[in-house]
Structures are given as C-alpha cells and as structure tokens.
Image (cartoon, rainbow, N blue to C red; front, side, top):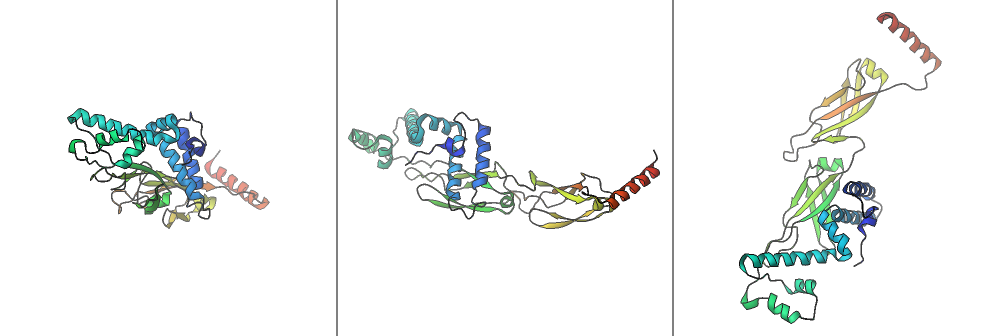
Length: 307
C-alpha cells in the first residue's frame, strides 16, 4: 500500500498546530466536497483522502503514532493494543488472550518460531477463546447548512470495500455525534461489532450564520422602502417569506421571524427563529435633478427641526 503523507495532503507543516490543521482541512474539504464538484470524478476520492488525513492529524494519539512509525503506524497501534490487553488479562486472573491465526500472522509474521507461539496462544491447555466487542470507530462528515436542516445521507466507503449508507438526522450541529450501531470494528470471537460515530462539521454558509437553532441573516433594503415602508422578500433556509417594513425603519433594525430557524435535533417539530437585519442602500450616481431635490429636502428638514 502506498504511503500517504497526511501533512502534504492538508498542505501543512509537520509542526502545525491544531488550529492550523483544522483551518486547512475546512478549506480543502469545502473546495473538494462532492456536492460542489459533481462533475469532477476525482473529487470524491480527494475528499475521502482529506478526511482521512484530518482524522489522524486531529487526534493527538494517532498523530503521535503516525509521526513515530510512518506508514506502519496502524500495525504498531494494533500490536500495542494486543500487548496491553494481554497484560491486563494476565494481571486480573492469570489467563491468556487468544487470537485467531489471521491476527497472529499480522502481529508476529509467518514462519520463524510460529509453532511455539501458536501452541501458546491458540487454545493452550484447552482454553477457549475469549470474546470481546469490536472497537468503536469515528469518522468526520461535512454537511452544508441546508443538509443539516433537512437531514442528509452519506455513502461511506472503506479501503476493504465495505460500504455503509449513513442517515444523518435534521438539526445536527458542528460537534454533533451520530451513532451507527454495529458499524464499527469487528468483534473478537463471538463478540458483537463496535459502533461507528459520525462527527459532524457544518460548512460555513454565505447567507446565514447559525446560533444554536437560530439563524441570522442581513438583507439590503432600498432607502425609499426604509423611509416609506413596504414589503420585502426574505429568503429563509427552506422558503421565501414577505417581511413588512414599517415606515421610517431605522438602519440596522433586527426583525424576528418565528419558527424559521433550524429544527431541534431531539424534537424535529420544534424550530428556532430567523433574525433578519435590514441594511439601507443609499442611491448611487444621482442626477442633477435628484441632487436638487435632495438639497430642497435638506432645507425643508432644517427648517422644520431648527438650527
């Protein structure tokens, strides 16, 4: 298997800190997201590669092992887990942990003193293999704000060819963890498989900012509507609504639109609010006649309000 340089994939130095790694990951993941590059057949593979690099470098222990052992870091980690479990088991009740022949060959290699190890590890004195639940796994998934609102599906594909159709519920946030029961590492013996946890990262949205289940947006309004009042079309996350602008609305006023925010992850029939900030747009490239009218208006205002 070719060695993947996770630092090169993310374009960061080997001494990069957590913030720099996260910033590089978010930038690249957004650029190569399959939804953004639907016509690029290589984007999906590149996106999975970026996620893999981030998953390792954002985990202090995995990063330490990767820095120390390079492409063999996963094998060293499995061997360390095996040795730790064997010591723990022996310290508790003086029994030995049994492994299957595939794991034996992976940890110790074929040939050599395998006869001795096999007689020692596989059913010594008639001992039965001990079952153990599989390891829980984590995988980072990026969603757009719209996907977080409606819920989403992802096809997860592993190097061994296994595929998982993951369903992500509406209302998830950055940092949310979605549990996929039984989709983690395989169990040992008769032990059940572990679980797979999807760690959610919501991509920035150009139109809206999220605050828990509330959304915030800023819309531009012409000066005449701000002064005289009128109706304004506001695009929410799932619909367009008409907002009543009363006469003499001050610049920067915030309107609250109830129930037009994000769904609650635990109660999908409950929604946050949409807060709309109105921002006045001043007319540009005034004609001579318009300038004259504005001058008259200024004089009228001065006369009515006094010096």
